[in-house]
Length: 500
Image (cartoon, rainbow, N blue to C red; front, side, top):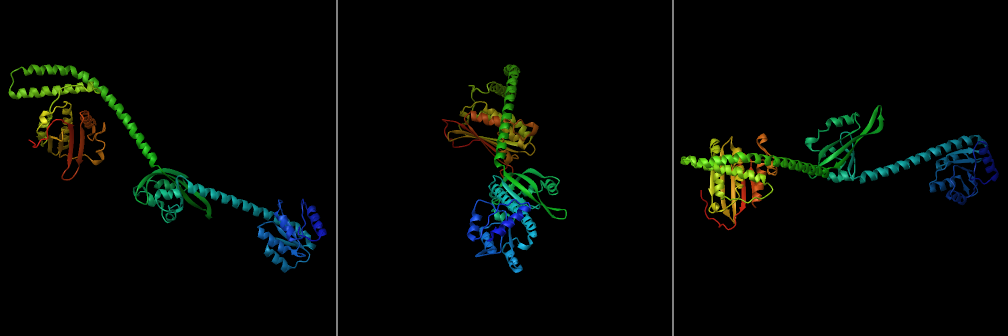
């Protein structure tokens, strides 16, 4: 109480006590005493002040409270205040005034002001809590490890966090003038059209999808979009304001891991298929050996008979092919062991392959040209290379069976190596398949192909210490495929001329 008459202060306390208040009061008369009271540990619920005291009064007390930012109900109780002074005091911050001759108004005024003060404190607490929540949201939003944005229902950015700005390569302030659709690939913009319509209409609260997003520099990355509808309350009769929350996660690493896992699983499956194929081949090799031995004996007996020169040549070719089949079965049985055996020169191997496919080539109007350089007939290689050349020539024929064309087979010695080139003018191999043509079980021939030909071919070449290179084009002047095999041929001189 700011009151210079102790008797008046006691009467006011008695009046409050009789009205049901438990009073704990402090009477002061000076600004210094008021400052000391306001600075202490006690929290005051109400200040009752006389308007005029010697050297101090209500207006000076209000000014001191405003300087310190104190919000406590302030009621003037005075017997000398006039209406103009009361109005000025209210403008200065007093909450009400009561004349000492009309104390019946004091209790209702106190009750009202205490209630209003509690409402103000509650509002301040709510504002502080909202501010704290806003700070926490802002920190979480801007420091999130994923991109986040609020947009209007038509996709215009309203709020964007730093991570999304980094993902899309656009500063935050510039993104507020853009639309989320600007960053979705044109081919995918309508992919979630129905889901988004259901979201905006309130038929679903959210959905998740994976889409490719385009950065500002044109690069593309896969992203997982988590989309939710946010309702912000009524803005009119039966109208609710809403926005859309987007959570954007870069899943490039996850996609790469999925591809790696898929490739690993495919390799495991192929390994199992190869193992099964090996077991079957081993069984077939055992089964083939017996009739093969019988055929070999028959051709041996036929060779002793009197036959025409052409017949003798055919018998010789047949015997060599039987020998080749026998070599294949022996190689199959000893798949993981390198077996010593006889060798053949490259010219003989290539000539036999050409003779084997000549009639088929003529039937389909395909010309086969062979060129052998000096020294080719002096090198010795494992007859397994015959299978390599047969696979390559067979593939070339299949590429031209419907259109005709030309196959060129060229062999020469160069820089201490034997180089064999098989080229054709067929339809070529699509660029998308060039990296996988040597994978086991990959084929472009449908049910006619096993997918093992080029895989086995490269394996045999590498087993001989050589390398295999493939080039192909599907259009233009140089359409077709060229396969170049380089084999070690130490001790052979460099040739100067190619012979037809």
